[in-house]
Image (cartoon, rainbow, N blue to C red; front, side, top):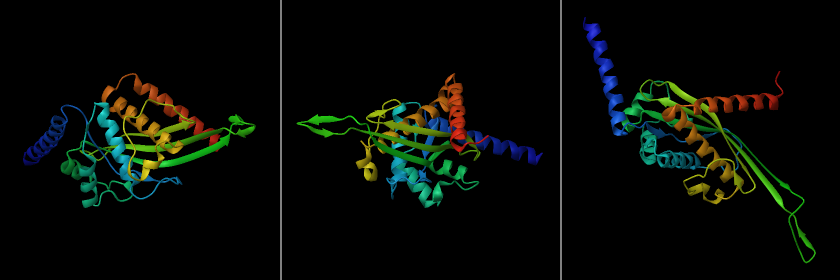
Length: 239
């Protein structure tokens, strides 16, 4: 009987904590974004960029209007003070601690796993008084592994490899609503900066789909993931 009562009490405490987080977010998912990590050879990655990307994604999620986002500095202080941000990995069992200290229901982590950039001559360009100025075409590709950790259970509720691409002066997704600063300020109008913006918008749209809307967009993202996997197989020449 005592064990039964204890089990009920634990369940009620968990439900109360989850309910409190929902109330704090006005019914919206309460999310915090951890420091991004890097496993690519991107030349633009340097000290501080991980938290800058965290702040940029936090701004994008907040601008979306469907999330209650824990302030980035608060997340940074908590994760660093608790030594939970090392290498971007959340230690087993630390999820509830993060949730309690920050109020976040979910912790979003991001790892840049690939970055490629290519600049080539288009053979065109401008001609002035007989002097030809060749045109250039610049492309960039960025891949980010996203995980959404449930701070109540410690489980990974959602995960996806999100891609961002840029070509010349265009970005292949919707307009990014934030800005660049810090170590990334000089990348804002470069192919790298455009690919980063594309990836952040795609991440936001994906999280909005699977965590809030949960409609036909889910099947669309499943189709995107299948296409990405098929592309990876072809690139690796797997049978």
